[in-house]
Length: 181
Image 1 (cartoon, rainbow, N blue to C red):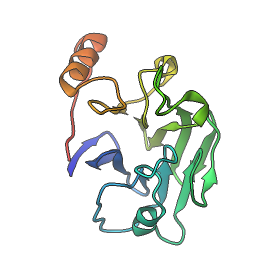
Image 2 (cartoon, helix red, strand yellow):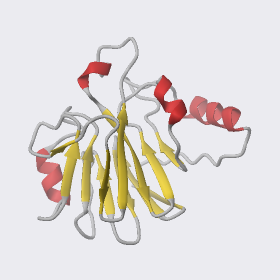
Image 3 (cartoon, rainbow, N blue to C red):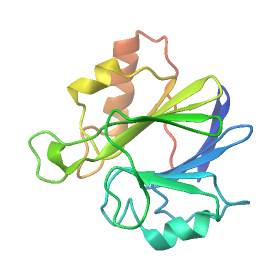
């Protein structure tokens, strides 16, 4: 588990695709798959897609409370279904479901309705990519923090190459932090 704070958001990475975002009043857990021992239940759970390692009902129940909003674009268990492009406000959190897919690979095809999320907590906008390649839509996303998959079987780059890519594209204007579990 590794934690950092950027702007109004405390970000904790639990491993695999499990990321907890905490603001002053609300908390959002994306893809609660990796073991997580939380001090308190979260307000929002988001699933990026229906694969077992991103959408596990048992693990969702462990981090949720009665009033927790559970959402996704194609969950395998009861949740609020979102459409790609849909914007939702829950408490003081604004989230937008954005596309996530692989190009030229069968794992996460575009028509499977996988999602990433742009999550605004306070004045900080966090993009959690989900399982995706670098896709054309990403160029339009506005965020302060990008949490993207790197170095895995279904993803596009190893951490060193990713860091170099980001630094080249931002000409050193962006801080790159790689969080490891």
